Length: 149
Image (cartoon, rainbow, N blue to C red):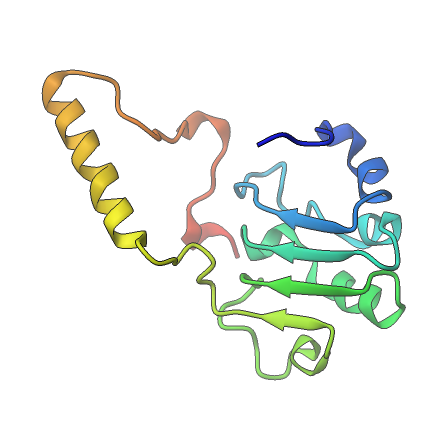
């Protein structure tokens, strides 16, 4: 679909100042680890909400808690957290403006059929000597899930 605007990384804080919702859906790399912290929450509108469906360490949870307590932002929806499961004593559990889901935003009706279809297409391409679809460029700094603590 069409986007009203696309912003470069260097313009993040200016873009945050105008957003009603901020959806984090980036890969975990050295550049994105800690991408959202106190300065970014301070740049957001007090009515804004943040949604993280990426990796927990992209967002500074302590800074998020403080931003919510201070009223800097209105709410958060977290499908991922720094440690999973989220610690029982995390203040996020007690915050009514926070929704926490168990790291399953990618699980949708038809998910397994879509994965099987993608696998079969890549299997066909591999045997035909054609380029594979959805290949991760390992040289671009992606971090394995087990490394994101």
